[in-house]
Amino acid sequence: MRLMWWRILSINPYIQDPPRPDTREVLHKAMEYGIEVKMITGDHVAIAVETAKALGIGHNIVNAAGLPGLDANGKPPADLIKVGRCRLTPG
Image 1 (cartoon, rainbow, N blue to C red):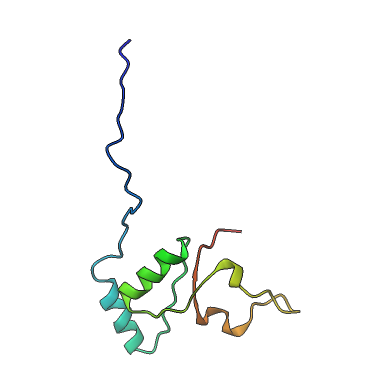
Image 2 (cartoon, one colour):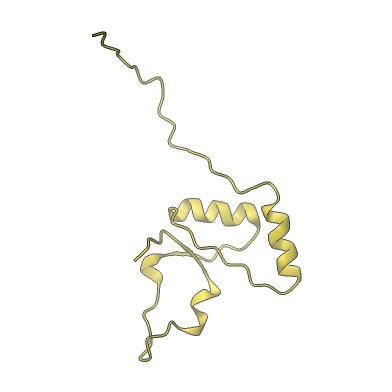
């Protein structure tokens, strides 16, 4: 049996998963038609901010801790979808 030894040459903390090249154009076309574009992501706040900046969809990014609770009827507040969300995990 032959043992193999690996040597780490570098650690790259930036793993890029950029939006598709046409995403910005499509989102802005949707906004021209009056569609309110929202972004929900499981990414870290810093990544969400940079993605929103790259797409030109705003800078109001909050994490899941900023989510409001449900009202007495078990419904989310009407303004819940007026901000970007990041670091969300399925519940």
